[in-house]
Image 1: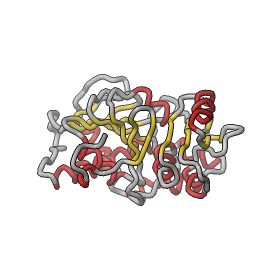
Image 2: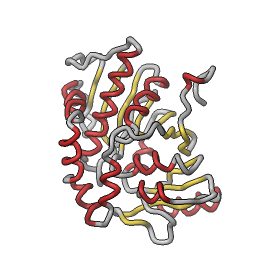
Image 3: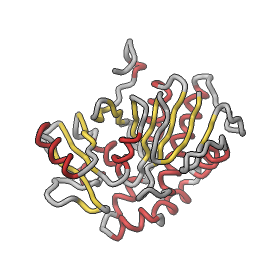
Length: 262
């Protein structure tokens, strides 16, 4: 199994995982407790149109702030507390939702700290040859929280493959784990993936890095400190969003089904 880590644009034709830890991935994961389907929109205008067509709740942010006229922002805590009888949500964000446009695989999972283990398990169930983690970043630049969340997911992918007797060698075997930097220059540097795994193991350092990151400080300044605290909790839900055919739904494990998820 090939497992790769990239930035913004996915290249895998098999399974991709979108990672935007602060906050889109976490918001989507929590929203799956409330809504049967989530429609990503790549602009506020598109979000409004989709909401009209699907009778959906509108959620979204621009520069971290809730969009005027929308019922919700890109806030996992707001989503958690929100009550509605509607089944659908439309979400637009500056980073996480945007990178869904750049995925080449037909199936994309939504990964974060809060569902890392469950996301890793789902990816291993679905993948045939290549799992790619795609970091969202912030305003097209590297974001440490997405790197650390990817490391957490990579760790559990490694553990899941071990359980399946398909262990991946992270000891500098370029045939097993490959990486590219965000300039898309293939380097095959397994040290990058390995360093993400190792960095994610110290929870205190992970929390400190995320809180003091550019994203963490910006969100705190906007009054979303509680969102940051929620987003950095590891493995507190089994929800995994799966993006197919323009919408995100809750992944149902194929282990309990007679055929592959469709």
